[in-house]
Length: 58
Image (tube, rainbow, N blue to C red):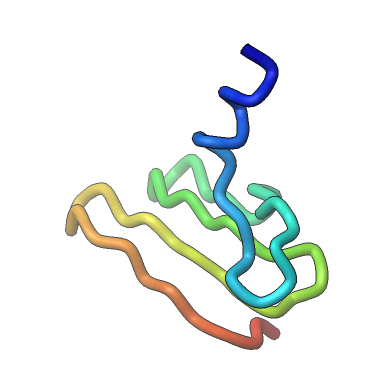
């Protein structure tokens, strides 16, 4: 069962590190996941029901 958490962790497509969720905004209910090396960023907007993915975050 230890391998089960690998199915649910989202990873950076470039460096394969697990994405962090340190930039989330509870007031707007957006979830922002960022690569620790700032290669990749993935945002979820529940009102729009969409994901926005970008490379090379600032």
